[in-house]
Image (tube, rainbow, N blue to C red; front, side):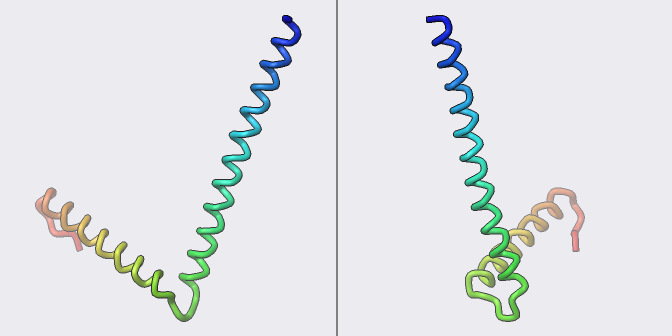
Length: 78
């Protein structure tokens, strides 16, 4: 029973590490695919509708963030 316990513990540990490793590899590959597509879209001569909408949203977010900072610090950031 003692030998089986060590083997089961080792199998559980290896299985857990293998499963977590596979999950991380999958998430990383999804992240890289999205990153590559974003770079490809940003370098394209004709921008997609989604890219333009996302860029407008990001610019509005950063403008709003700068307004909040300028009000809280008492200075106007340009």
